[in-house]
Image (cartoon, rainbow, N blue to C red):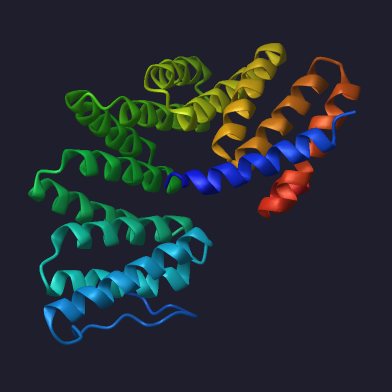
Length: 291
């Protein structure tokens, strides 16, 4: 999910302050409302309650409260089905799948994504179908079923090309790059991320610029080319600042510190590493904090 402009602006300001200051199936929710099965009153009343549950579920997802979100999203899905709001049911399934992916419930996530894709196909909405194929690929990747993940991405790429949707195309190519990165196939990784980066330059999609540059930086680091890794990490950091992605900014600062260390310049690594630790504490990334 892409961040709102206000949230990106706030996060951008936070990053700048830090960098400048350091220069020198329905499941009961454990703590949420349990899903209901009976529609509440008239279709209009049902729709209103469904919207409320859906919005609450999304707010909880933004807070990474996955289990609580599921209780609301499952209910929204059932209510939308009850009044034949197929597009809204498909969107509910999308976020149900996202929550289950985050919880590591990959098979259940795949089921939700498959059902959502089927609805979008029935409605003839190829854009949403392609986006769901990306989510489906991530779920397959989570369970290390890489052939199925790649097939999902290939299907999404085909649709993106048919639609002429550069943003969708670039995002999907970047997802494929991550798969090959996980598989340790460096010869494929840089080429895919460079394709995604070229597309981001065409479309002006700075989020894609950040993610593609980050992928290239990691690939160069893995292949023992720290100077090139540093350049790509700096490019990713700049784009991450612009879109207010604190987590990615922190990771790229770590990449920069590693590159300096690998180039035999440990003194240069101290500042970006300290900046990364500050950002990691802000976003609650305990794993990054301990690196």
